[in-house]
Length: 118
Image (cartoon, rainbow, N blue to C red; front, side):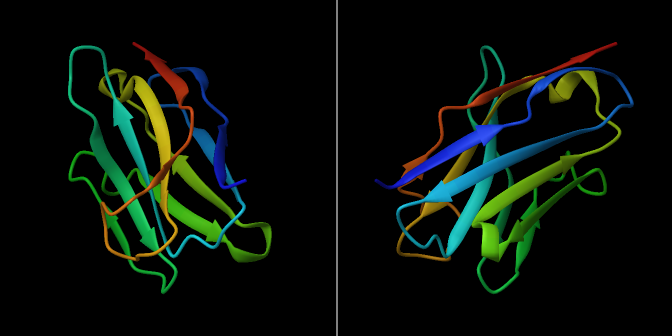
């Protein structure tokens, strides 16, 4: 079964850190990313990573968030530092079973809530 399972969300004070994990199974995922969706807003791409190691970040998280991958574990992480209240959202892991291109994702996790208090 091809699936992505996120974990690691929670409540944190502004300035704090969280690390999200996404465990992939059932297929190789040459391209993976993290999206987020806040109430009343569209889902946005936060960070992406290809199997070749290329990363991309939304301007709003550059310098604060880091996406990484442990190949042997088939797990992708999103380290989030210096969190702000505007980072509050449901975070989704996404992966592509066929492409490294950003956004061409065909598999999604269930989402994990991140809440940053001021």
